[in-house]
Length: 95
Image (cartoon, rainbow, N blue to C red; front, side, top):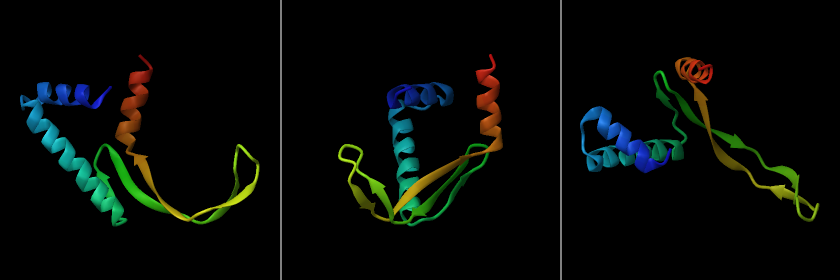
């Protein structure tokens, strides 16, 4: 599903315009991004939790040359789905 398709479905379900839905959609994801950049956690009940984790510097290999290299420390986004989301996805896949 593309963003445009998702916005169209939300607009249809809510009766809002696609422009209004797009504005709200972008505001939600900008807010999530801003808070994750500050390493805050975000909990969305019945959907899941967004958080960040620090991935420490480590040794790795360049896959094309095989040469050993240092992969720098980074902050990565982690998503843990809520039980309700897992159950919904699993019940739909059984159909």
